[in-house]
Length: 177
Image 1 (cartoon, rainbow, N blue to C red):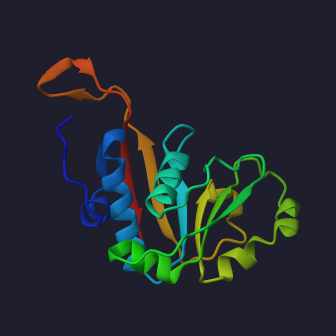
Image 2: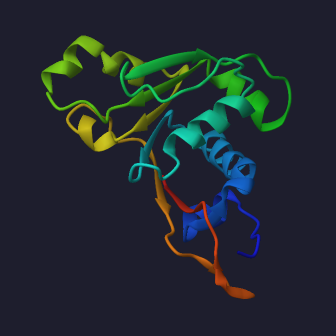
């Protein structure tokens, strides 16, 4: 795959293909989208293995979170303190948000489970930067004002210069605000 510069504009206009070596560019684009938006909730849609948790881990790392970030599949929710940053996009993000909230709703089947989690309070707090995997499971409580990120794995992608070589770990990302 020819390395294409990934920007917030390309991701929002048509989506962009990337390999995992370009995850830092994807993270920068997502953070720039957040910086230029009043929204604090990002939904992550994609099949198992599409890269939802990898994206959240990479964003947490970029924001200076030193804790190990894992998928909260069994705990449903994990909260991380965003350290104070002083420059550029990271400074804007850290100045606006105090916590990164990572929700994985994959295991939620019973709407009554949601009541005990009090997720609405996390959504309503503008100091929380919230990432939600499997947002369709929270459709009845999810605010309509979210940044939607669609991730997909591109199967059998080949390089035009070497059509017999199948490239692995190619993803496509598209952001809808």
